[in-house]
Image (cartoon, rainbow, N blue to C red; front, side, top):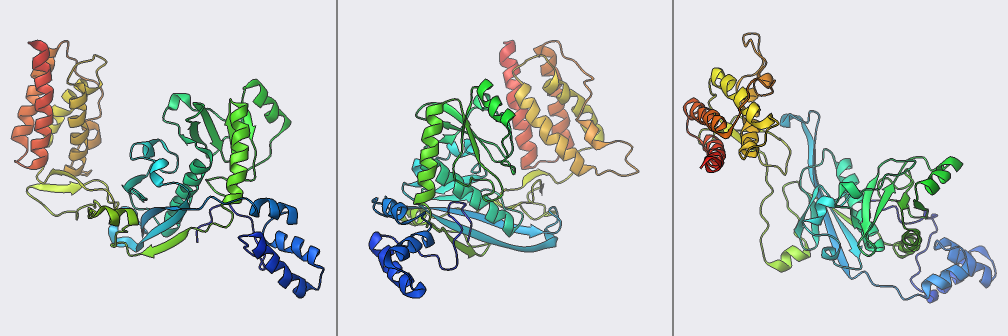
Length: 434
């Protein structure tokens, strides 16, 4: 069971009343068990339920609870290896899916676009209306539990406060002290940025307090346990708005109470078995298989896979037969000059795409050896040896690259794609010259 960091540590005799009537029934049993008066048993029952005393229990249990009408499902796949780059060293693999009770639909908290800006959710995709899934495999089952726990706590934090991930790096507030494991948020209502720092130390010195004043920041301190590592890290929330800080303190205190008894469900499954959430089933649309790396060394239509060996990411492809190294050594300085020259020109971005691919291809085609009297990494890495004064010179240089690639590689999809990219760059230069 994931520890969500929202409840209190309970004794072995902890009770979970859902109403005052339920609390009174427990008190009768406790009174008989301990041989104490009924009013003392009521206080004891309240304490076992996590409240301060009977009055505290009456205050909270008398409030009508907003029901947890919705669930969010969070899935992580994991594969553990002794060598991350060697699939033959696999120790184990699996899938974890967490069911998180919510008072609102998942779609009111995140969208496919906003996930990129949301702390602890950036590695997830919105697989269905009620289902978030890690895009890439985690490196172990423990890492999968950690990723799901942080994602779930981030969702609860958003649901409880109304905060969203801060989309602008320029607007991020820097914590004036104890800056560690920081995440950056903003309040859609006031448009104020908020920083959550979660250091392992919770000691705030007098000089730290003074720095709040001259930095014009305010600090929220609550019983909430945070997102990063509840029980080990200590959440500190900073904002320029004192009103917002006061609101967050109230909201987080209320959230701690309302989620006190909520226990997310966890399902362990086979690595190969994709999870179908209720939202996915209701849509009637089948899931697409997860992208996976292709087997190394298997030639497909004149191409070989390379790149990431992590589940959730498809392989990149390169020509199976290498281009002569002499051709690479001619192309490298040209593309480097077109890409990294300080002069702006319309083909720069497309030249970079081709340069990036070829700089990887040459390293796979020509592995380091004593016979190879050159460092293949340096072929495309500079220094800047060439300079083109105008677009006509750039066009001539680009045409030479296309000619070398066309004659240097046999026909295959990666070759056609890179020629298409450079063809577009060539067209942009011609348009500029016309």
